Length: 483
Image 1 (cartoon, one colour):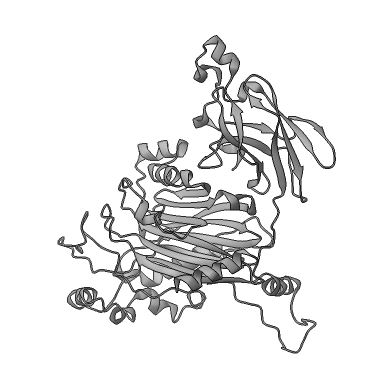
Image 2: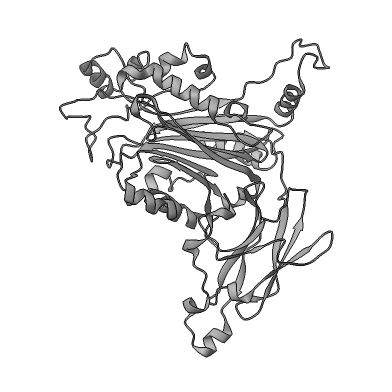
């Protein structure tokens, strides 16, 4: 089986007409205000021989006390910092994130895919039923991945057994109200592929505690499925019917005593439940009014474009793993992991710009960046080119930047030169890359090959302390540049 899978992956990488294959690793975890664990290796499957292309992590109940929340609005929160420091050495970049109090959504990509992840937008919706205003709701990230519109929606819905219908109402409210500045996919349902996940809080009803725990101990999970509220709701709610979910072949992830695998032994004795879920929705295919009607009569322009896109650029999804991770005990919830293979035909295969550093770079002389637009793109006066150390963890972690239009010194139709002051180049040097950030598309659209910035000879000769020469402080880098 392993050999056959490797062969199919190889065929896809070589240009299978069906498209290329990408591995997506998703995590949802209600962390119950706990601080992060020391090690994320098991959670992210970092020892797996199979390489992951994208990581999407949705957390709920991240600690948001007044003092911590103020600090986290200026600096990355401890959870984000841990994921970034863990994944950056493995050449993953935090492409986008969004937080609504305790709700946090993080999107990471291998650096090779970053120039093809475009039109990145993030938004949130508060749900205010039953006094939960603020700490319940949904956060989402919308983006184009090689031209395919994807949306990731992390939700924390109303708690307690009796509120199953209200949870569906909250979900439908989030789906109806979240919009994006994008003609191709202005609403969540317009995206080619949507992932809905989080602490959805659906419970197992009717069955008594003894029966539920007996089924869990015997691993007879299927006996509980018919009374799982989400599975029940999916049978009668049209919007839910469009979403798919893998079988719940793992033990319920709520509610545990801390630092144990023992279900709630407190006086409340909460009944175990699959509150933490990952579902997905492929956009339904447009069907012709008449199978023989090749002129597509009866379809509007948008539907015709959608039909042509589905035919010319197919997108398929396969779930390879859906499970809980029982190793982590810092919360009363266990994390849930979903691993998917996306097979798609790329709509774009060339970066929008090509970048390179001209000549030798050091803090002793002003430098030049050369870039070439390879395809038309919506450039603006807010576009900038950032200098990053190899192994950087996010768009905001630049060493310095230069405004493309302001610092342009020479150009022709093919190559444009942009000036970088020597005062902004790190005196200690190191391996670096250049990234072109497009303000309109809200993303990096070109990354240079790594190059060496040489150590400043002047600084060495004069015995100056490097940190006092280069005054750039990365911690105060302006968020306005990419928001």
